[in-house]
Each structure stands twice: as structure tokens, then as C-alpha cells.
Length: 59
Image (tube, rainbow, N blue to C red; front, side):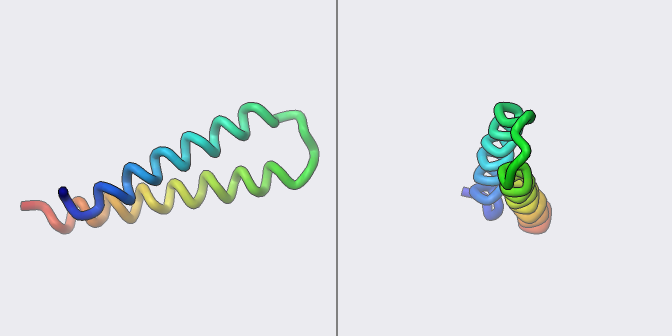
């Protein structure tokens, strides 16, 4: 398995989960939007770092 593939896939799943949470709770005015933004950011960071690994370790 290529290096960087697992973090990229994990980031995709986490970002999709965070986006679905934010879509379900758009009208709530509490702490959830900040947590959802953090989850989406965490997922996007994994996608970027995994993509960097994929590009660096091409064969």
C-alpha cells in the first residue's frame, strides 16, 4: 500500500462526517459549529498531508 493513502482516506471520511454534521445543525447557536469546523479542518489537514506523502513517494 502506498505511503500517504491511509491518511488521505481517513481525512476524506472525517471531512465528509464533519460536513454532514454541519449541514444537520445549521440553525443551532451553540458550541457545535466550532467543533464541526475543527473536525472539518482536521480532516482537510489529513488530506493535505496524505497527498504530500503520495506525491513525495511516487515510484
